[in-house]
Length: 79
Image (cartoon, rainbow, N blue to C red):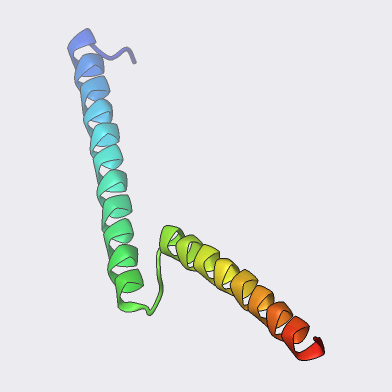
């Protein structure tokens, strides 16, 4: 049985609509999941990577200064 051209075009159009709706649903789900994850992360007691790196550099500088002061104190005590 051969389908008329109109029926084939209508079927193709319905398939295309279903596929495009599927893409939109997938995108909506992804956006909702992303928003949910971001919302939960903001509730955690965490800092951004950038802030962590800044604090790490400050700590490294402070440690270097402390080591330098400790060495100066040792030198003064040994004099």
